[in-house]
Length: 268
View 1 (cartoon, rainbow, N blue to C red):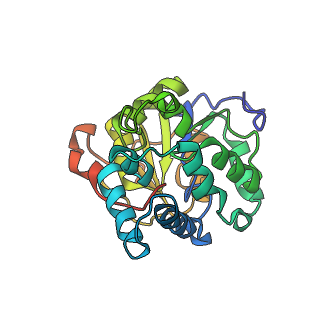
View 2 (view 1 turned 90 degrees about the horizontal axis):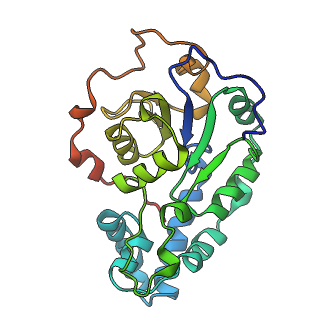
């Protein structure tokens, strides 16, 4: 259970659980970890796969567009890339010292009376490192990560035997909902990626687009910074009103499948 939280669940809230993305959601993209990750992926493509340095960046973008991540793309193309080796390379070289303890965020997370879960495409070691740097150890009862979405990958006998599963695929969303044992209609999902938000809404989650000032059609709410959560979505703590201007009008059927395929920021 959540050792950071000792208060009782707010019975009047429409939410039973909050599911948080990690990278660029719990800490700002402005610290540059995302750019460092792109550079590490490019280096992996050159050093481990033999691609030309001049082609690495464009290849990384193409793999992301077509397969959802460079690792997923490489394995689909027949490269026998071990996921642990890949993550150790691209995440192990990240400048984690740029992530500073965030006492304000810790106090905010501690104040949330509902269950709190991390849902990230990254590997568990990366997630634990980031949470430790932020000072959020013990604040989340569960981390749904790469290993949980891809449990059979270490057993594969060929690279394309088990396709890599990541957000925003519907399979990833299903795995997360089942692992967290939540009712999507009473679960608030916070992510900085529009494709992930679209996928979340498609499976019935209440969605919060983080790091933006303009709300997308797939988002129920928008937060420029996760620390604005209490001001913008007060119904986490108390019941909300029907007329909240943070909420999108419309139904889940309004979502266009193409919006889930729209290209956004790179992931590993």
